Length: 333
Image 1 (tube, rainbow, N blue to C red):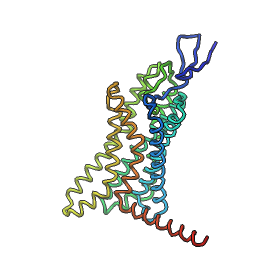
Image 2: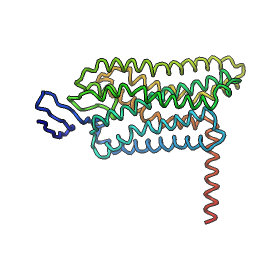
Image 3: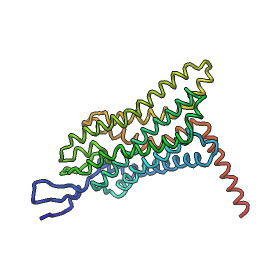
Image 4: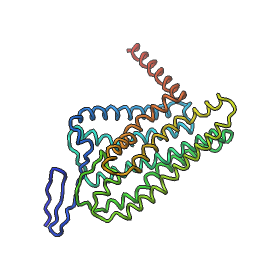
């Protein structure tokens, strides 16, 4: 017979037909070792989440409404802002609920679903950043052919391909992972569901899944990184050949924001997934995960808005239109 009961660390189903326990819930330890900071962390993450959604939504609105931003570069930027909004919404609402209520449990399938969405968006960002670097490569290295090469059709194909590629590339790994059996313990020392912590909790044979994950990373993550790297090597080489200092500064300013975003994204990603998962580095690993999973979506719109004259001009015009509309409405009322 099958007896189900709940323990403090999660829901476990025991089968008397065998000596294994099947876990149906995980416990995301997150910041549970800092109970005195829960209120402060809740307020901090709430402000970050609101600012992230507001900042990225503002960029999307500017790209859609301002005619001067209807170019390939800003079309890609609008998609990146949309992705960042989805990215942070996959993690932070669950973290906020956990800090507020103290309930750190998540179902196994819910955890795998979060991993799928998070992994798909991370893969999409890799593709999208490489597309944006290719766009900057054409703009700087082949300026006479840029308008012809980077046409509307190609822009749509690159963006759609990035989104589909990100979600399809992770689907196989997640479908295999959903068939795993988890027998305990059920504690994940993280604030969201990530691949490696989940693998450690499985009592199934995960060898081939881990090999598949390495192959997946090689096929779907490394090539976009190499394309991004190759694009910027060519861009920098072209910029250095420009004779005038003013010309070099102008050319570099068109790609500096994207280069900063790429450096932050890949830098923290490499630290998180190449660091040894030892106890000594686990805290650093979690801090870096906070950085690329929570703070990067926040700083991206700031980087593009503060370093981009066209975005700042579009924002100024939008605010001016808003105040004119507000004043006219107030006067008429």
